Image (tube, helix red, strand yellow):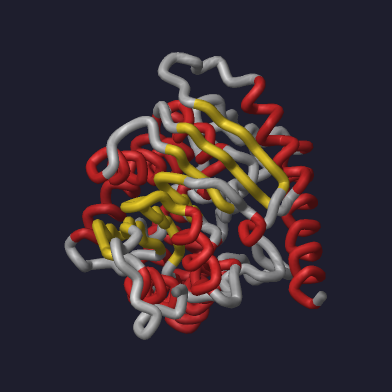
Length: 330
C-alpha cells in the first residue's frame, strides 16, 4: 500500500508539472518545439537549445541502437512522460510502446502523436497509462531515459526489463550521474555565467557584478551552483521534478546494469549545458553562436576529462544464460 501511495503522489506531481508547462505554451516535440519564456534557464526555452541538448541525446541513443541492433525494433519506453523521446524513436522507424504513471502526460503525448506531420518511415507508436512493473509483451529493447533515478530499488526494474526482453534483447539507458560532478565543474559554470552576465547575455543581469565584488561572493555562488546541479533544482525551488527525484545515484544504477547485463557500449553525457543554455539572453544571431560554442566546449571537455559528466548512456544485452546462484533476477 505504501508503494501504491508513493506512485500516486509521483503521478500527481508529473500531472501538475506537464499541465503547467502546456498551459504556458510548451510543445513536447523536438521537431516542432517553440520558444517558451516559461522556462527561464531550461533548454526547452528555445528550439535551438532543444536541438543542442535533447536532440543530441536522442541522436546518440538512436546511433547506439543502430550500431548494435539495427532497425525496426520493438521498443518499450518506460516512463515516457509527454512522449517526445518515444516520438523520435518511432520517427526513426521503430515500433514503440510508451508507458507512464502520469495520466496527463499520456494525454498530452497522444495529442502530439495525432499532430505529427512527419510520417515518412514512421514505425508505430502507442501510449498507455501504466506503471512499469505491470508492463507485458516481448521487446527487442527496453528504454530507460531519465527513469531509473526515480526508483528506490533499481534492481527490480532491471530484472523486470530483462523479463520483457527477447533473446539477445537490449536495455538502453540515459540516466543522470550527479554523484560524479565536482566543485571544480561548478566553478566553470560560475565563471561562464558571470562573464555572460557582465556582457549582457545572461538572464541574471546583476550576477557578474555581484560575483566581482568579493571572493566570498564567488565561493558562495560556486557552492550554490554545485547544489543546483547535484539536486536538479534552484535554491528557491521547493522540490525537484517529483517527490522521488534522484532516489538512486548514477553509480548505483550503473552497478546494477553491469551486474545483470552484458555491457555493449557505455558513453559519457554532457556536464552543464542543460541548465545553462536557457539562461542566455540577447539576439538570436549572437545567442545561438554562444550556445553552439558552449555545447561544443561541454562535449570536448567531458571527452578530454576536463569536466565531469552529469549523465551517461549505457547499452546492455540480455545474457544468454542466467545462473540462479549468481543472479538475483533468476
